[in-house]
Image (cartoon, rainbow, N blue to C red; front, side, top):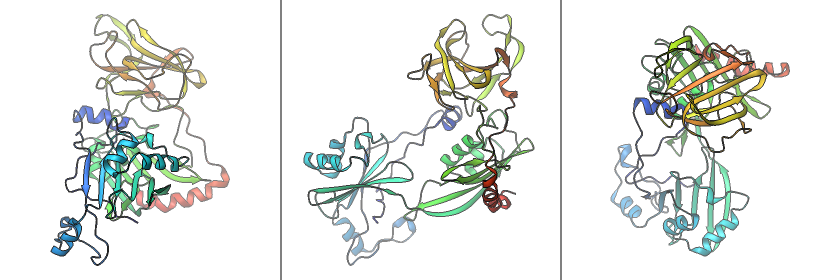
Length: 428
């Protein structure tokens, strides 16, 4: 196995952009750090007489002989995919491969991976082994799989391999003092894992409106390393969140090859509706029978919830359904209306824009982006006006009490309880 290339001058990477982080980071920090530079040149440990080279950051300096061996040739190069890059451009500029090589790679990769789909901001690793042209290329298509290109003369082999991690089970626990996001990071969780927790409990907890100071959390998760270096965390194996005195549980269970999360009774965590159409936003106008409209200055019924959030924040459908309209309406501005199962409907108003393809008749899934927060229509500032009806009558989304998820088959409960008991003591 090839060791990972180490940069001489590391660059900051974009953090994963998903809904849970975008709103919070926009509100709290007002942005994120941008990447700089598109290419990093690496030096790998030499082969042959010099068996290993300790890195300076580990507190041990390289010997002169080792330094000379490492610096004698460029062994590897790490490039970051940029907008406008094509496979031919990437392979030529960073791998010193010509048009015939690119054609051969694309032909060999059919059915394995489409290199025209590489993502902007991700890294691709090139290894040379002292040759002019790259002899090996690695590209992680996600956190679990890597695509490998190997050259032998003028022939190329392309294959996909599972990324091998060294895995340990870790426990992180803490108490809410400021914000869940910050407190969870302080407890030792990585940002992606914090975001996953938000998704995990999104059916029962709104992490901005429901969280109380003093709430507690405990998470058991897979800590992973790759070639001795910290890597992305693995699965959350078990979790407990004590919100306002009530414990919420989540246990990972592999149900005949289909892994998912269940509560302490063996019921799936998913419900018909998400708790909120936004994460990490604050409510500016609670559900009430009457309020003074900020523009008309008249008392009107307001059977919706207003979520303040930065313009452009993605808005998601809280349940699967069918779009009945997506248009501009007087007062509402840009608004999406969706019909759901069992007589429920929802609307999402004052949007700055609709999501691509959002038209009447479109089927949407739970959590699918339907538009973006704005201030269109009768609005005094960027926010989302979210409302819900049951059989045509307005209901308070915050007080919606939906049935728990479907239970596991009785034949699976013994295996589930065994998995649950394995981690229950760690959650206390």
